[in-house]
Image (cartoon, rainbow, N blue to C red; front, top):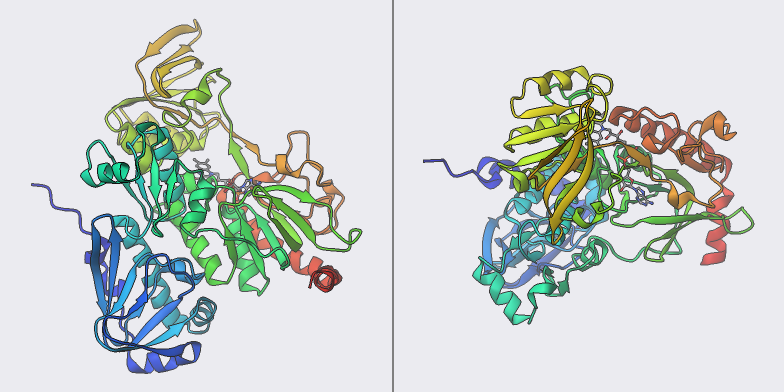
Length: 562
Ligand SMILES: Cc1cc2nc3c(=O)[nH]c(=O)nc-3n(C[C@H](O)[C@H](O)[C@H](O)COP(=O)(O)OP(=O)(O)OC[C@H]3O[C@@H](n4cnc5c(N)ncnc54)[C@H](O)[C@@H]3O)c2cc1C
C-alpha cells in the first residue's frame, strides 16, 4: 500500500505556526495597534484586503478555508500566534477567514509596518517571514482561498489559466464538470453552455467566463489600479532574475520601485526545472523556487509589484525632457518614474510551421514544468532544440514520459549543449537523439495534436509518429518591440545597446540617459541567471549616480501634478 503524501502542515507545523513569547510580543507592539473582538466576531473574510499581520494577545481565533463545499478549519491561533500569509506583505486579499472563538484582543500590524518589522527585527523577522511563506505553500498545496476553475483538465484554456496561477504562486482548484458533482452543480447554477467553459469562480463570488489572465488577476486582487500621479525612483520592466535582482537591491537601498511583468515573475529562469550552475546550490534548484525567493525578498523590501502588467511603450519625458519618464501599459494605464530599468529579457522562438498556432494552447509547450509532465505522463513526445534549456527539459521529462524524440537540426548536441547534459542524455534509455532533423508537418483536430512528421538524417527520410505533445526550445528573441520609437538604440538583432556602444558614460545605460538595460535583453550579455542577477545588482549603483545628478526630475513633475 502506498503511504499517503504528507502535507506541509504535517511536516512543518512548528515553523508554519510559531508562537511568540511575551517578550517578543512586547518588542513588536510598536508596529501595530490593539483591537478587541467579541466571541463569534469575524476578524477577516476571504477577499478582504489590507490586513497585514494580526498577533493574538489573548483569546482564540479560528482560521478556516473556504471552498465550494463550505468552510473547513485550518488552525486555531492562541496568545502569541499570528494570523497572516505571504500576500499580507502588500495587503493583498485574504485567502482565509478568521473568527474569534472567544473574546479576543489582537495587535494589528498593517502591511507597511509589517515590512518595517521584518527588516528591523532580524531574527524574529526571519521566523515570521518563514511562516508566511510556508502558509502560502500550504494553501497552494490544497488549492485553498484561490479561484476555482471549472473545466476539463488538459483543455487549452484551463491549462493557460492554470499555468498563469501556478507561475504566480497563487492557490487554485480545478474541477472537471464531467466527473465532479460540485463542478456540475456550478455549471448548472450559472447556466453555462459547455462551449463557454472554462468558467472561473473568484473568492469574492464573481464569475468569469473563459477570462484573460489580466481579467482573472484583477478578480483575485493580484493587480489593482496604479497611481498615475506617483513618481517612482525607478520602474523595472521585467521580473526575471535581472529585474528581481534590481528590485531587491533598489528596495533594500531605499529607492521607491515599481516592478512590471506582462506574464509572471521568474522570466525564463522560472521555466527551468533544475538550475545546476547557479552559485551556492550544489544540488541544483528549480528556477521557480529560486525566483519565488527573490520575489518575496523584493516585496519584503517594499517593492511594488504589478503582475501581469505589460509595458507597451516608453514615451518621451514630460516637461520638454525635464520631467519623469512615462510608461504606457497594455491596459492604457500610465506610470511615471525618474529612471527606468529595461529587464524584459527574451522570449522563446516559435517554429515556422503554418498551423502551429492551432495547437499552441493544448499541445505545443514552451515550458517543461510538473504541469506539462503530468499532461504527457506515459506518452511519447517530441522535443525540438539543442541548447541547455532543451537538454534540461529532456532530462526532466524523461522520468515522466514513455519516450522522447529529441530533434536536433545540427549534427550533434555537443556544439551547443553543456557536457554534463550531453552525458546525462546519453545515459537515458528513453531519449532518442535524432540529428539533422526538421519538423515538416503537424496533424490533429480541435486544437489537439495527433501526429508529427519530420525529416531526418543525411537522406532526409520522412518519419511520422502518433505524438500528442511537442516541446519547443529553439532559442529566444529579445523582448524589445515595446521600445519602438522610444529613442533607445538597438543592435542589428534588436538587443538593447548600452555603455559605450550606446554613447553612454554610465555603466548599463542606454542611448537615453536615465534608461538602463540589464540581463538577456542587453546587447552582448551572457545568457545566464548569474549574469542577469549580477547586472541587476550593478545597475543600482548607476541608478543612484543618475538620480543624484538629476534631482530635478521628480520634483518638477510633483509640482505640476499635485
Ligand atoms: C528552460 C530554460 C532553462 C534555463 N536554464 C538555465 C540554467 O540552468 N542556468 C543559467 O544560468 N541560465 C539558464 N537559462 C537562461 C536564463 O534563464 C536567462 O539567462 C535569464 O532568465 C535571463 O534573465 P532576464 O531577467 O534577463 O530575462 P528573462 O528571464 O527573459 O525575464 C524577462 C521578463 O520580462 C517580462 N517582459 C518582457 N517584455 C515585457 C514588457 N513589455 N512588459 C512587462 N514585462 C515584460 C517577461 O514576461 C519576463 O518575465 C535557462 C533558460 C531557459 C528558457
